[in-house]
Image (cartoon, rainbow, N blue to C red; front, side):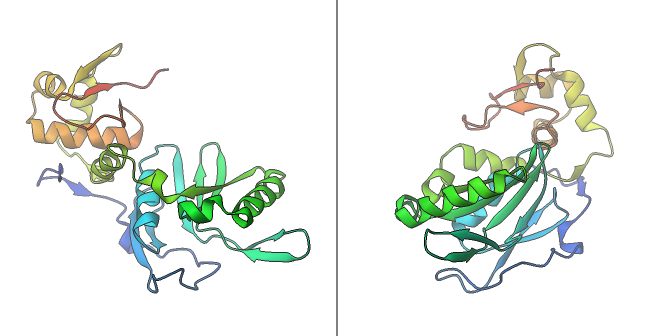
Length: 227
């Protein structure tokens, strides 16, 4: 669904900025042409191949601790016991806590001995520089309503509220405890649709929190983050 009021506009439009060069541009599987995911946290469109990678980016983008995301950021080497093998992770994600490298794999590939051996080798070597590594099975990305909520939150990323709806919504949110979207809209005295957009934007910014495991609606509980 679209929660963005017609009078609002976006800033830092990702399409205006170039993506950092990819370390490896060879297509993966049946996806031969990369698509671009507009990342307002990164300030550019992140290349991806296939639906599952798009889902990963959707989930990463909604995390307020993320500062930037890069596709295929660097090529690494790992030792399989007899030879060195080059490998380029699908994504690098930079957060307030450091950097993590990720590969998106099918459940069968995720459970394969080669994948597990590579994951252990890369995690061990990258840990020396404070970087984490993880392979993510595709089925883990499809969990609802987390994925749908993430799409809704991202639909309101980068919005600007010239009439101060975001400030009014934040003020109307209890300092202790929580309230419903409808209750916050009523106290802030702005239309429910605009309250929806402002709440989702503030969730994207990390200023408010919702339960991402429950489908977002007028009855959803909204609270401020714990100090």
